[in-house]
Length: 180
Image (cartoon, rainbow, N blue to C red; front, side, top):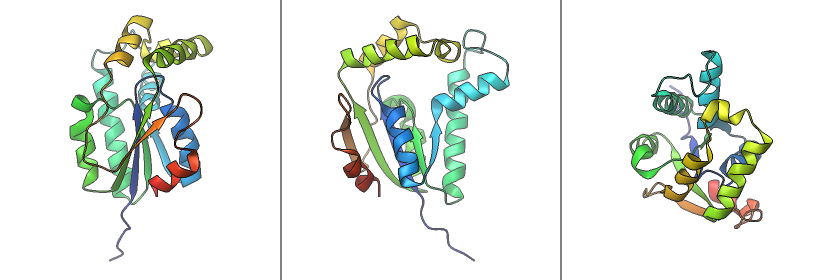
């Protein structure tokens, strides 16, 4: 029987507007890892069902999150290294994330930026991509609340906090080394 090497799981998280999607899109090809974005999973599910956020069932976020983690888990079990990107909230996501520790070598990256800059980025993203509201219902009030109330996962894992106000601190080469 061929033994599959332990896959790597890089979890990229942070409050909305913290730069996690941009960092994930940069790191995935640089590390030759499959990128799984929770927002993309949700968007694809809504498109497949011919629905937008307002028409979707109330538990679409739960369903999308469940499918997201099943995808990540399936890839890891096949030996594929993954970058998983989402605004993982400590209380909501911790049980899912803890399951991944048993099947992969996990690194946690937490993107951080001031709440005011996150709000600015959040609002700009909606302005540049008005279709986002179709998938996420990104109304300013609830989005701004998510930013202010965000609590990163508190897990006993190798963790790197990344300041994203102006580029990345530490820089991308140091982030890549941490992930390896």
